[in-house]
Length: 336
Ligand code: NAD
Ligand code: UDP
Ligand code: UDP
Image (cartoon, rainbow, N blue to C red; front, side):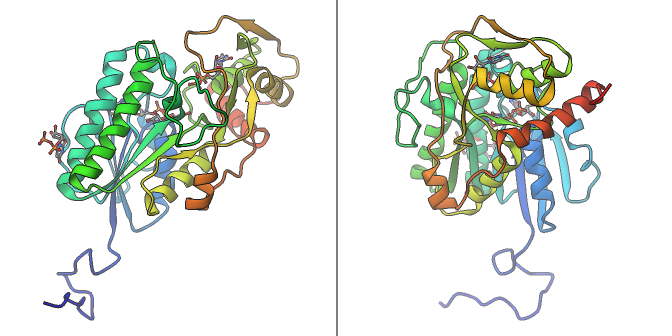
């Protein structure tokens, strides 16, 4: 029998497969830093309905306050380690603490979030036929032995270290994604996110950009962790959100690196923050934490070729945007 044609006029019986109907999108971890910016972008499209599921461990309702009460928006207090029964077309699965001080706080819970949480979201995707995107991390490369990191690199990860709950947790989450894809035909997307910064980061989350900006605003010394020559590549959050949406909408499962290839040592980062935000602030060297990767920079050839994506915001342009947000939240105006 021939494929049925859509009726000529929209009728109450119209079917999402025939018409460009509304897209219902679940964002787990949507009350967090990247998640709330993603929600802002998704809500700009009037065809999108957005549901956020978050347990508020590191996120907050404050990040979503402009959407609470909006007819296309719904916020659910929910822990992804518990099953979730809803009907959606797409799932952006971000739920997981991202800052070392928070993911090390309760490492067993971090593993449960990555493993059981991802399993539940895959079970949901399977039941309703939704496409699911996982925000994995550059930490799956561990302390990398190749530089810059390409997606084909398998990584150099300590399985029993203090960071393992996060990086091994994300590695299992990626495995689960591919096993559901191969075994059950689920449509999957995996983004390997490199260090991201911007407004709404938790002020005292211990990550380097938030630490340095808060320290510069408070006139406290910038704490470079030894040796200071370790490198990171920092992506502004609007670029990140753009990359995630392109990945979700495109045809490639990934994994695809999403990050800014501009590479800085922590000393260089401190010098930039000092120059841009507070030229009088001191820079000091402090002790580091175990298993700190020595260098990290994404190879984004795949993102460029397959998604037509590359970051636009340079570090020196992004830092002042974050400074404005931190000053507002800390109550310290620019020229006090
Ligand atoms: P974040 O901590 O601001 O956001 C994470 C959100 O997940 C928070 O709102 C938190 O409350 C929620 N959450 C945590 N555990 C949960 C659970 N069990 N159930 C429901 N909600 C839960 O972090 P972020 O920087 O926005 O990171 C978002 C995602 O991106 C994470 O998956 C993280 O691993 C990934 N990522 C971030 C970076 C980065 O530099 N920010 C780098 C690599 C990967
Ligand atoms: N699950 C969920 N929401 C759903 C469907 C499943 O949270 O809509 C959870 C379910 O509780 C299970 C997990 O997803 O723990 C994996 O589901 P799947 O159906 O793949 O496996 P099974 O239930 O057969 O173990
Ligand atoms: N770092 C630092 N000073 C700080 C916090 C972090 O020099 O106050 C360093 C840390 O040693 C690491 C880098 O900054 O080399 C990035 O750390 P972050 O926790 O932000 O991210 P991740 O290690 O997860 O990439």
